[in-house]
Image (cartoon, rainbow, N blue to C red; front, side, top):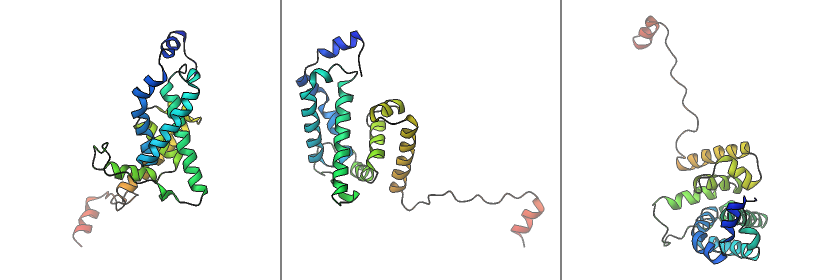
Length: 193
């Protein structure tokens, strides 16, 4: 993630404190949606910022310091999920959203976060990066080290699972259409035996 000379010079002017002030809220939103819990998200952002601070001279000259630190957050969330999974806990261990937090602008946010928690971490990460950060397939693929086809597949499957979680009573398959009647005489017999 090297920059051209013009962008590199501009990026080198950003100090770490300024970066934290400008971008920590966006990093928190990412961590929150990935983990579902305020405290866990705060811990992930804190740890990611700590790692970025230790290597700030290298981080600030990347194409996007925010993308670099966001990737750290994603990796930490993935590691946390794997640790919890290995410890024998199931995917229902997602932290519950704090109903008193001030980010509650949409009534259904808690349901969305819970539905996201039901997705495998890789699928969840793709959905979050695509919709929360408005990243394209190629950007997500580069950030996660997977193919663009995998991104599209994960996104499609993730959305399908979210839709089925949002409307569990609706049939997943479309009902078969009524048979087409080719002849008016046959149609008349069907309606008038």
